[in-house]
Length: 299
Image 1 (tube, rainbow, N blue to C red):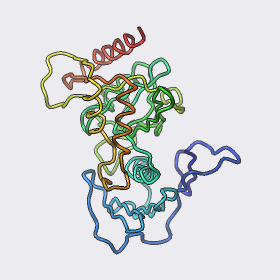
Image 2 (cartoon, rainbow, N blue to C red):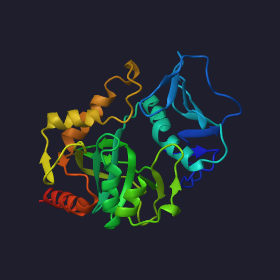
Image 3 (cartoon, helix red, strand yellow):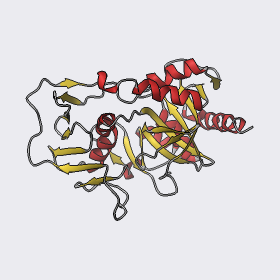
């Protein structure tokens, strides 16, 4: 998608003559509608008008309004600064709603690139997706996206789209896995995680083929060994469906979208369960196990 923004976001320059798919504009006044408001599990306040327009808010920080066709997002800042948080919210929860308005589904996933192809980690928040990706980053592999993954079927393959050039990590993970000074990172005011910018050598800016998906186990479970077990297409479908990024909009306008995306991935990409104890000291072994599994997939 080609995006044009009135806000100073970290976007690639738009090529001359390229049509704009999504415009992010500055609102001139309050956006809150005269509608009952609901709160999502992630703390986003939202409401949908009868004509399909959406209102979203992070109380005290930002308000957003999305047109019914998902082509315009208005943003009102309720506090000064916080541009890093604005970009993270915009290209996470907010753009998710805009994409759904255009019939584009997403998975809750973090993906890294190995030998020119993507491996995606799916699982709920706090399951360790970003920390595992940081282990790959520390070993010289690139990050494709963190948190929200767009995957589209092209012929007999799935292609994964890049996200933002940043990684969200808890301070201890940034220190232990990446050995980066916590003081140099942007501290989010909306979550306990740090926003770590990725350099050109750390980020994959173009789409790559999705080669494998790993469904992470519950971190509260005790695992004596690192285990990678292939899932049947049925189980893979269910795990991917569970990892749908946006579970707020569940009305009929989405139709079969979530099911089709899960079916496309499960039928074209190997999906396996990945179980391991959440301990920084074994992350390198988990990474090696995944690399070995990816290599076997080439044979």
